Each structure stands twice: as structure tokens, then as C-alpha cells.
Length: 314
Image 1 (cartoon, rainbow, N blue to C red):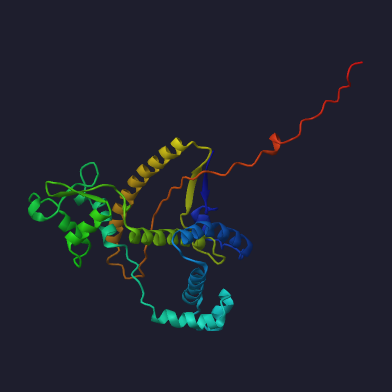
Image 2: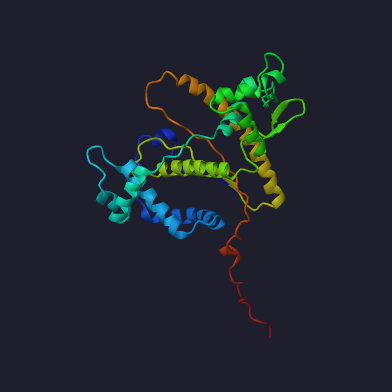
């Protein structure tokens, strides 16, 4: 059994001229209930208990109400925010005051991930077959004219030394330092083996943007075209077949990732002279292998056997 799940009901050109409709609190509650299950697992696994979670939820509701639903001609008063969110007005005032003193954290992708992205997408650092080429750790260790790891890091940032970046990639299990003075990339995607801070960063960034795309598609006042937000799924699989599909999905993602990053590099260069507002994009993929719940019994197979109406012979 296989199928395609999507949050796109219309073709993009049809969606551009249509509003999404009225708010649907019951449907939203049902969806949130499903979304909270893996979130609850994350909380239990990492010791995040309900009081702290409630505070985070209140803060997010207040921040989003102020930043997204404030009107240019009317200040977002505490009372207005309380009406929009259901958060008590005293809590709204406290949280808004707290937000003014919070130190905003950087939302940029970690430098190590940016280095890997350039390594697998820039033709300067690729072999003829489009695989990432091994790089000399420093210019002195390589051949004249060939790219090296120091050059790669400098193309991303000159604020951090190449050795520090290499040590971090090595710690995360992403690269292999060779005896000949070269360093090679183990994989074509940034998947740290041992880096919880990095893993939590990508959890928050990837899942947040995925959910943001789906939420935007369901916004009651949406007038813009639908965002790409789809998935394919298959069921009734053996464990071995599920593992084979995961391996295939990784292969497909590796090819798509490289092509997308190459296209994105060109798009970034073409955008340099544009004076309009700047946009950011994220293109992702995920794969889940889980034991499925037993399928409900088919009514056709659950009917009582019909009794014979023939009379016994006498």
C-alpha cells in the first residue's frame, strides 16, 4: 500500500486566486493533538516538564501575536494580545517585558554545516563525477592551484580559523583526516554522529520551517500560492524492505540536495544587486520507519456467517 500525502489541494496557479476559508478550531485541535505526541516524547526524553513547557507556550503565543498580528495603525496592547491568545493580561505584560531584555540568539546555520554545504555543491570542490573531492588541509600540503580546506572555510567566513572548523567536523564524525595531509568528507549531508547541540539546532530549524509551511497553507486569510508540503508513504512492509526504502531515500536526497545547493548558489549571486526585501528558503526531506498499528478489521470480513435456510431431510 502506498500513497502521497499532501497539504496541497489545488494546483499552484489555482491557489493564487483563492482564500483558504474560515478558521477551523476543531480540525486544528485534532491536528495539534497529533503534533503534540512526538513533542511529548521529546519533553520526557530530555526532562522538560509541563510547567516549563507552559511558560514556553505562553511566550510563543505572546511573541507571535505581537509580531504577526499587530496592526500598523494600532499598537498591540496587552488586552488585545490577551484576547488573541487566551493568555492572562498580567502574564502578557510580564512576558512582553521579558522579551525586551532577552538576548536574541543567532538564527544562522552553524559554520560547520555551511562549509559542508559549499563542499558538496561548489564545482570548485567537486570531482568530475560530482562527488566531493578530498582537500588538502592547508595550501602547503596540496598541489599548486588545487583547492584546499583552508580556502573552503575562508569562502564561508574569515572570522573562524580553518583548523577550528576541521576539528569540529572531525568531532562530529563528518570528515576523515588522511595520512597524506588531505581531508575527505564522509557523507553528502550534514548528519553529526556526536553533536547534540547541532542536532537540536537542526531539529528546531527544520521542523519549525516544515510546520510553518503547512500552517501558512492552512491560514484562513491566505491569498498567496500554496507552499510545497508533500510526502509519500508506504505500508504493509517487512523490516528489511523498510530499510531498503530508507537507503533509497538517502540516495535520492543526496542527489536532490547537491542539485538544489548548486541552483541556490547561482540564485544568491543573482540576488546581490536586488534592492528589494530579502527572502530565505529551506528545502528539506525526512524519512520515518515505525511499526504500524494493526489495520482495523474490514467489515466485509467481519460479517457473521449466514445460516442455512434449508430444511433437514426427513
